[in-house]
Length: 182
Image 1 (tube, rainbow, N blue to C red):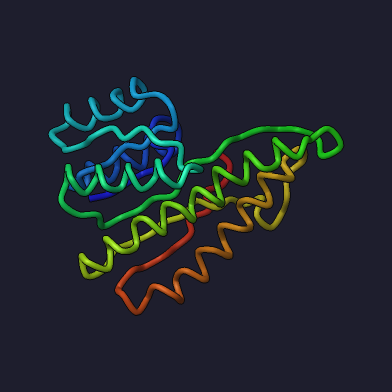
Image 2 (cartoon, rainbow, N blue to C red):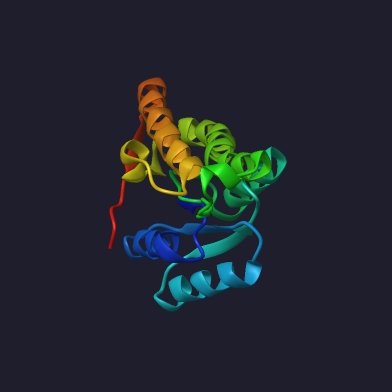
């Protein structure tokens, strides 16, 4: 059973479809649109897979816990967490507000923390699991008008490395995938 955050479009959608094609039941997370989630779920079901939509803003700790509880109720376990949710915003640093800065970090970093905290106990119960974060090339190279995005991706790399060390004893593998430009 895999939970994919930000699974309604782009790479998140592709990850959800790929996991389902490989035999995983997929919890498709959307921040706000049940309709978008249901489109991906429909694709998975049409191909013979199992999937369910879970609407939750991952920057909200309570919403994350409710989502993970729903995943467990629906599928009985949780084996894979893919931390894909993010916001792509381009703003020059000189024009960036602190509110925009915090919103980007809240989704990608705080949201990843909330999801890992909620999912890890379930993975420990299951005897192991996998956490995959989505970094990016800009973690080290930076990107014009994406200071917040660069910080987030760099933070996810550090979080992934630290979680790998902390969680290996439980049989939980933690890796970061950094897709490049297409």
